[in-house]
Image (cartoon, rainbow, N blue to C red):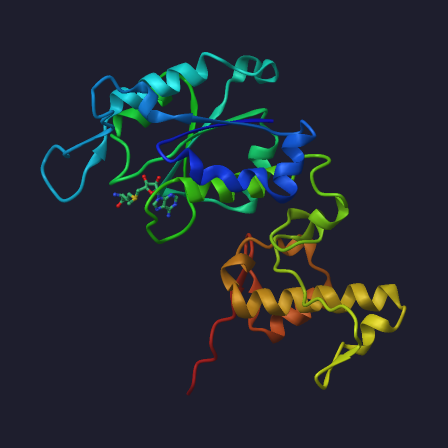
Length: 273
Ligand code: SAM
């Protein structure tokens, strides 16, 4: 996979040389190219921002440097990109919230291009223009809060996507067993323990050392369901009832959830006489 990042703070992307992502780059599984937006300015001050039309606080990123920078990146595709071109990812608090589902979709792409906003963001015509040109643009948000720039979002998205590429994580099976994995029905992971069996008076649940693989699997599934119901009930709305056996239904009923048309819903509270 190739990743191009356009930013005014390229140094911010240095962590992409570390750990598993750095190793993936060394092994040729991932190529990261960082481009300086200011290389596409033509004034003495290398200006990338200006005041917003309509007034208001703050400055916006001008469209011209973005147009030049992105045109230059798009004009140099990796061979693997073929006709489809890249997905252009624009981090923004107004974008779709980035999830594991999106990470899986992006991991199937050969080429991702990121446009990192700063100040109050990028002139809205940049996204409009590249969409109109047929580029697949996705505005992605890390969550409902505001950061200073898109570089942190690039670190997050690249890490979440690159670890799904074949060969990046040593034991691929571990990916399927994690929180939010579709193989795991999008549930949160069960609690996990390692040695020693007792630590500061706290014991590892006995079932985990029983050697009974069926019992371990059932315990983990139950814990995943209970944890998800208690911490992230919104995720149960996407859990397919057809993938739940009688034991799952009983656990969810105990937690106060019943199957609906597409997912699980909180059971209606009992009405007092
Ligand atoms: N004026 C924008 C608004 O209110 O929606 C916020 C701009 S923010 C200060 C500057 C840049 O930080 C954005 O262009 C984007 O690149 C990045 N950013 C801020 N919050 C983000 C979030 N939740 N997810 C992804 N990127 C974010």
